[in-house]
Amino acid sequence: MHRIKRVLNVILMLGAILLMFSLFVPFRSHTGGGPNTRAEATAYNLKNSISAYFTEYSEYPLRSPDIDITVDTRNRLMNILMGSDAERGDEGRNSRGIAFYFDRVAKVMKDGRFYKGISPDENGGGILWDTWGNPYHVRLDTNFDSKLDDPESPGTTLPESIAVWSASKDGNFDTWEDNVKTW
Image (cartoon, rainbow, N blue to C red):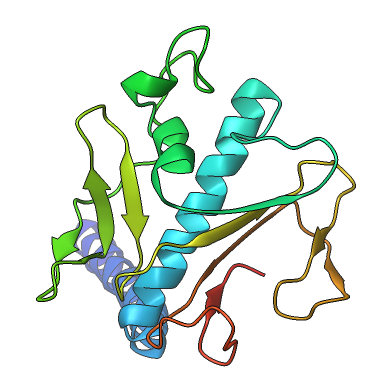
């Protein structure tokens, strides 16, 4: 009887492992793990870090009370989200110096540009680069009307408070067929 229980436990464990494996493999093969997947994951991580900042401070990292703002991931936004020395203290936008965003150090392309991560600066901030060596664009609902002007379809709105997008391989933010976006 004891041996039968042991065999049944082993069979159940193997069944559970096979089930988990079968769920994982199709997802992984579907996403492919290519450049768009990396860029999309980074865009969503950035969006989540801005949400975490908002939860902590009850405001967005950058502000403009009358209109929604669009910025890129060059210094100021990333310095705030990374808790750089320049943004700490009473005068900074991240007074507690909390690191809401972190990523790997960016690689250097043959032409000297950076890609796939952060090019850090000496103050603990930096610039976030997509897979193709471009900064991301970010639109924030800083007027708190619970919508954003849709950058892809001018004249329409998105029911979003934060939108992040990448120009993708062609490097052109105006060609939307290939852009990576969070909406």
